[in-house]
Length: 293
Image (tube, rainbow, N blue to C red; front, side):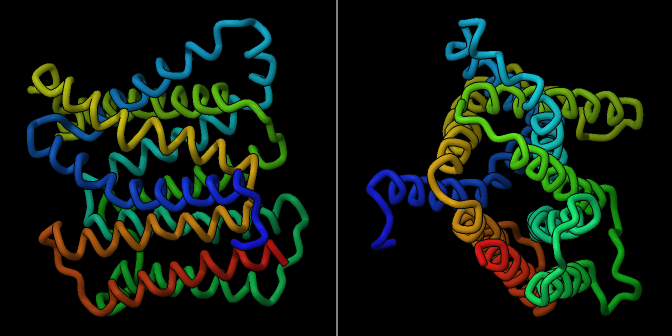
C-alpha cells in the first residue's frame, strides 16, 4: 500500500468496502423474501434502479460508442449477479456465497481452454483448492458432492457466468463507467425477468410479488446503498489498480458473507462449511496472486 498513489489507495479502500457490503447482500434479499417479495422481483427492481441511475451520464450519443464491446460482458456479469441474488433465497446463504465465489477457478479454466493461458503450478493448486472447498460445502460426507437443490445450481451457474463476463470485459477494457454499469444492469434485468417468468410457471415463491408495492421505498433505499454504488465503485477502481489486487480485496465479500451468515442466518455452519470457506478463499487468493506474478 505504501507504493500506491493517493488515487490508488482510495480505489483499494473502495473495493474493500464494496466487498464487505456485497457480503451482506443476503440480508436484504432474505428480509424482502420474508415480506412476500420474491427474489426474482427484488433482483429485477434492483437492476431497473441501477440502469436508470446510469442514464444521466449516457445522454450524449458518443457515450454509447463502446456498446458493441460491452453488451456481452454486461449480459454475462449482470445475469450472473441476478442468478446469485435469486440463489440467496433458494439455498443456504453460505452455499450461495461460496459457490458464486468459485468464479476465479472457472476464470482460470476458461483462460486455459479458450485463451491459451498456461496452467502454472499455482493455478493448478487454486483449482484443487476451489474444488475441494466446493466438495466440503456440498457435503462430501453425504455422498457425491453435487448441487442438491435449484439454489445450489443457480449459485454455481452465477459464478460461471460472472467469470465468463469478466474475461470478456478484461479483453475489451473501457475507461468509461456509466456504460458498463448500464449494460451490467440490463443483463441483470433480462435474467431477472426470465427467472420471474419461469418461477411463475412453476409456482415458485421467487415470483411472489404480493407486497412489492408496499416495499418499493425500502427496495429503492437498499438498492442505492448496497447495489448501485458498489457496482459503480468497483468498475471505477478496476481502472486504477491491477486486477490481482482487486481480486484480493474482494475476498472481504466471501469472508463477511460467510461470517455474517454463520452468526445471523440461523442455518447450520459446521466444520465442513468452515473448511469450504477457507479453501475457496485460499483458491481465490492463489489464483489472483498467480496472475500478478
